[in-house]
Length: 119
Image 1 (cartoon, rainbow, N blue to C red):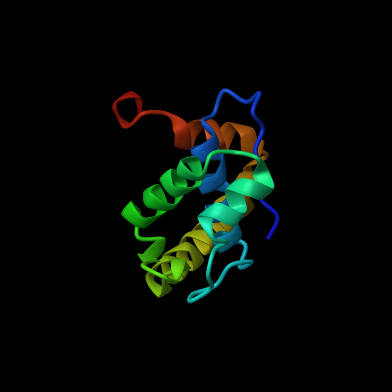
Image 2 (image 1 turned 45 degrees about the horizontal axis):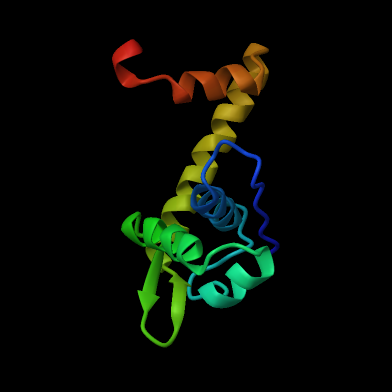
């Protein structure tokens, strides 16, 4: 798994990392029980602050995607991979339906991103 950050992006660095890790789980690149890189090592390779990586890991922990274990680091949870597998199937169905309706995926993404009170 290759993680990258764009310092020029308006999205915070920790959020960029969290998104990439979520995508890796959805794509099956990361599976249950797999360890994420040590925060210190990942921070050094990306030339960012270690606390930025830890912040991303804590966000993912709060979502239930990873467990943070003292001495073992961040480990992908079984629950997360099951949930993301189900979500991936639902997303694929939405993609197929959008294709049948001739809707661009950007329109579907905008619908998903729209706040509930505006639906």
